[in-house]
Length: 332
Image (cartoon, rainbow, N blue to C red):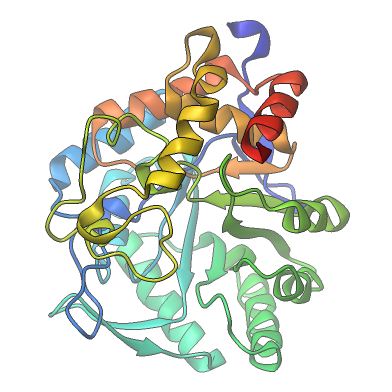
């Protein structure tokens, strides 16, 4: 197994190195909602378990944690900050801004693309995380207008000069928008959706051309690429998968997987679970094989999930022939 193990990858072009696997901290934010009261979190959480899971991840070599100010309306950042107390120098922290929210009601209330709000949001994130700098500061509004985004990119350059952040990125699935941010000297990455069921060739090409890290959200298709849904699992109350918004294509009402997507998972299951991998570990292995710039950030809510995800590092990427066969099976 160790012959193919993968440990670290560069976070873009600025000299930051991270574990090849990051941990996404959306789920540990707990329950929060949009203006209609529909869930935007992954259900109830146990903060002590979240902290234990982060500590276990650190012990297993994970050094990259990705959160956002809006996850749990500030709660995810607070939990991450608590878990990393005394260990800040061991990790690379990424967070995001652009959404406006009410911490008291744990509700999303709007968005703000002004540079002034970016500074306000960064100051608040630093306070919640208990740190004096963020390593990767990411615009969380995927479709922000280009003119406003250019101003925000310039604001991020100011934050770098002030020592408040080390690098920045845009969380977007639009290569044109990612390219705009990439024009900035200290842009290090783009965060975008990518997994074995939903490739992103244009974005991966851009990352290669511009020297960016490809930070992969939804690497496990919101849980579809795990064993939870093989036995009839459903989204729970307070779980975004139970009331899926339009962009969440993997699940239907009640959190039931869409049959067509489940069929695609089954088509590639044998390859993904080769060499002793779990399904989730195989999905992460596909991403590492897809590009040397990918850094997947699966979510977690328990020590067991942290151990399974981190365990993928020891198996390393899939082989080139396996990638080709997966592409053939999904095309069919």
